[in-house]
Every structure is written in structure tokens, then in C-alpha cells.
Image 1 (cartoon, rainbow, N blue to C red):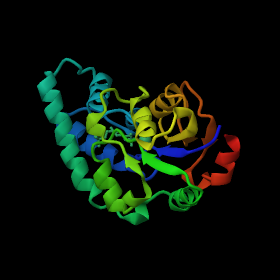
Image 2: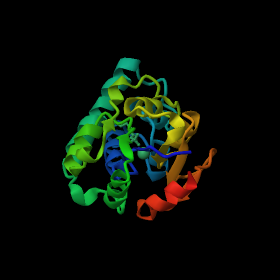
Image 3: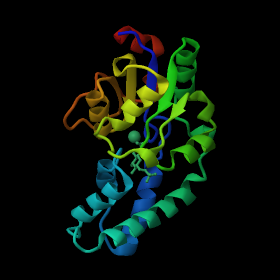
Length: 218
Ligand code: B16
Ligand code: MG
């Protein structure tokens, strides 16, 4: 395989926004009198906003407590809390090793894209001041099928003009690894809690990302 592009997930790969997702869901759960902890938060990684709320409701045996409109409006309320919290992000919140890794890849002619299903991704990238490192940023609002469907990774490959087998996807969530494999790409898993599919390259943290090692794997 000749490597042409790297496609990055955002939350948990470029920066750690999971703590803000946790705090925002916790605030909403407390208001509703529902149980929510770090273990449940783990299940929400890479999962869309509305599906995340469904998981929280399931864990509280409350799936039938709200209409679809009410669920939508409560999930939006969480998003308002989240949006307020992420305004604290600065370039110091970029995860270790990310900027040197992307810089080296780019200087070797590799194109880079972001495949995040977060509708807040553009704002997060702006706050981290790293939008210019990417040739393409997928628009989460246009994604019809969330991860584990391959749609978002395939959209990035197509936008960059490469075949899936010329791309590597980098993810921190099980749903994301499944999405990368279904797209026909090699996966790099960052601290993934493996429940089913194993990433092709398993790393403990972004600090272990090494361009030469990844190129040799291809
Ligand atoms: P939002 P990723 C995902 O981002 C997060 O991992 C997940 O926890 C979140 O629910 C989802 O984005 C939607 O985010 O509510 O901001 O639209 O991992 O795909 O970068
Ligand atoms: Mg993620």
C-alpha cells in the first residue's frame, strides 16, 4: 500500500474533549435525576449526540420517558453546556505528539483530514488553532450514518481524491475503528477500549505516534 492520507478523529485523538462531554452530560443527568458516571461516559465515545442521550436513558430504564422532540431538546441543552465549557480550550490542549506527527507527515506529502461526528469540531479546531494542518474537515451535519458506518471516513478519502486503501484512520473509540475497517482502511487505535474489532496498530497514547513506523506498516 502506498500511503497518501491520514484521517483523524477529533475527540480523544487531537484533543481530550471527553471530560467536557462528561461534565455536560453529568449536569443534564443531575438535573433530570439520572445516574451518570465515567463508565457510561466511556460508552459515548464516538457516538452521536442523540444516540449518547439514548444510552444514558437506557442505563436509567427511562427510554420511554420522553418523546423524540423532548429527547432532541434535552440533547441540545447538553450541547449548550458543552459549547460553554469548550471555550476554555487553547493550543495547550492539543494532545502530545500530534503537531510534530502531522507536520512530519505533511512534509512527506501526506494529506490530512478530520473525520469527527462532532458538530462542534470546527469550533474546537479553531480554539486549538490547528485548522490549517488539515486539507479537509468533514462536515458532521452532512453525515447521514454515524460511526461505526464507514460514511465519514469514505467522505474524507473521496474529498482528498484517494482510494480508501491509500488512507489510514486514527481513532480512540471502538465505533471509530469499526468505521475505518468497514471503509477498507488501516486503523491506528489510540488507547481504545477494545470490545470487538482490534485496531491494526495499537498505541497507548498520541505521544507514541511515529510517522516512520506507520509508513513502514503500510
Ligand atoms: P457533538 P469524535 C464524537 O466526536 C465524540 O466522541 C462523542 O462523544 C460525541 O457525542 C460526538 O462526537 C458528537 O459530538 O455533540 O459535539 O456533536 O470522537 O467523532 O471526534
Ligand atoms: Mg473520538
